[in-house]
Amino acid sequence: MFKIYQLDSKDPLLGRRYVADEDRNIKLQRVAGLAYRPGGAFKLTAGEAVIPFEVDDKDLIDPTTGQEYILRSFDTFGVSPTAKLLGKIESYDFSDAATKQSLLLAAAEALIIFGWNYDGPSREDGYIRVDVDGRILTLRDIPHE
Image (tube, rainbow, N blue to C red; front, side, top):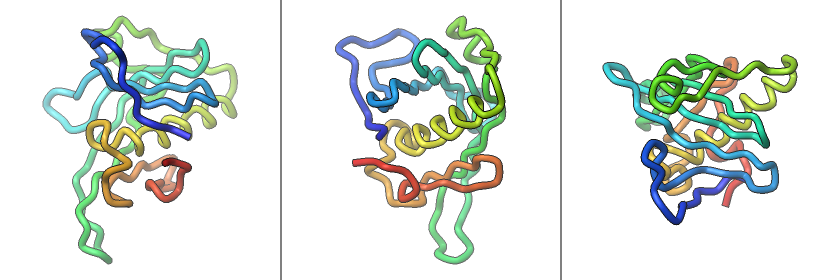
């Protein structure tokens, strides 16, 4: 289950906070927002694997409820020019498609807890939605506190 944690000292690039599932040894941190377009670059650490990726954010309105929400979709997974430039985080080669899919789903869950800026659990369900290969996930779809 992903939760938001705080470091004792601030990392110059990644800041002070991170999202982690300690039972699965997975951690997510934002590397940077992306200039000139919505979204951001992130680093997912799963055991020894360090996986950079980028997401696109769209501000939308639910046609049924009228609720404003942010839809995140993955632009890249395993590579991030922004993370490489700013954090020297190299591309990651997945051992197989199943591993990549499993880690993509974990990244989506972590992004929901990340929320807008490390605030996902305090947001209304559905405010952050993450598209994983056409499947839209929200806070109610993942285990959390």
